[in-house]
Structures are given as C-alpha cells and as structure tokens.
Image (tube, rainbow, N blue to C red; front, side, top):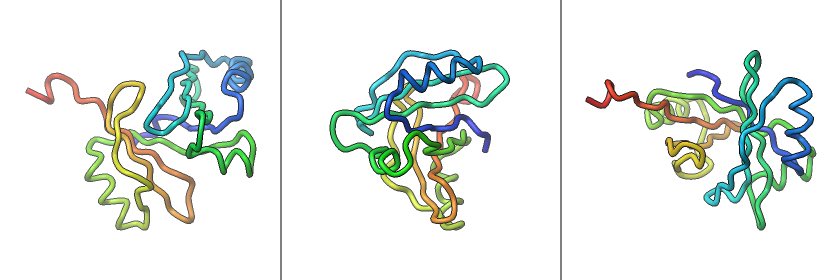
Length: 136
C-alpha cells in the first residue's frame, strides 16, 4: 500500500484551496461526485502529499457530520493498492469494515472503497491503474 492522498473535509472548497496555494499547492478543477454527493478538488505540490478537498453536495453527504463537529479537518487517508478486493479482505481480518460498496472514482474511473476502524481514521482504498503490459 502506498499513500495516495489525504482527504480534507471543508465547508468552502475554494477558500481552503486558496489557503493551500499559499503553501505551494496547485489546484485542479472541482468535480462533483454524484455517487457520494460531494464536490472534490485535488491539490498537488511537488514536495508534499496530494490533498483531496471534499465539500458537501446539495443534500445529505458523508462529510456533513464531521464538518459540523470539527469544521475543516482531515477526513480520510487514501492508499493505492494493487488489488482492491484482496486488500479489503486483508483489512477485514484486522478489524476494518467497508462503509459502503465499491464504486468508481469520479476523477479517473478506478475502483475505490472506504473502510472504517474504531481506532483509526476513515481509510479509502484506490486500485492502482493497470498499465497496458499488465493487461496483455
């Protein structure tokens, strides 16, 4: 597993993005993930982890309660994995459980799933892109 990004829940995605730009981050376009009912914006900086900003959509969304309790804060850690199904099974043995079903990433269509453990933050698994030589 490799850390892919840090997810930060925010009330105002553009305001938080501007603040991160002060630290050398470059903002990508804001996308709407209708599956999760959230807006997402990826922020990149060459010498730091990628950050995904997450803001609620129109109705109930998964970030509502955490923003209500904590304001802008770390929401999840995302790890890139070779095989998402195998990784989920390995983490289940360690006490993690999926919070929903496996879906496709709004950004690049790869498989993603979120897992919870009472003694850790929310974990997102993102299946690594398969290069052309692996699929032949």
